[in-house]
Image (cartoon, rainbow, N blue to C red; front, top):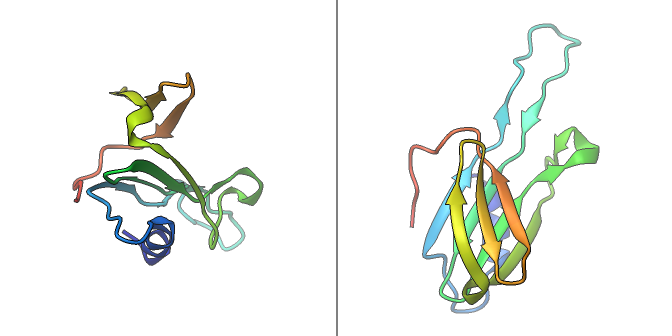
Length: 116
């Protein structure tokens, strides 16, 4: 996990709260830089964390900053009891809530390690 995401996770956790499970998808370069004036595109990073009280989604997605924000991030969270279901398809991890809303976390490929 990168320093930026580690720091944001620590900031979001309440006193005495700890991440029991995490899934980190690092920011990736999707178009290699071949020429000096050629732009590089990135796929934003995502971090899902589950605590005893809630589920957190931290991302550096920013459509106005070419897909990702170098320094910033956005955090969303919901009580763990509101999770109605979790499903996985070829492109995303879908987390459905009792309220009818859902999160769709895009997956590039499954990570090699899921850590606690």
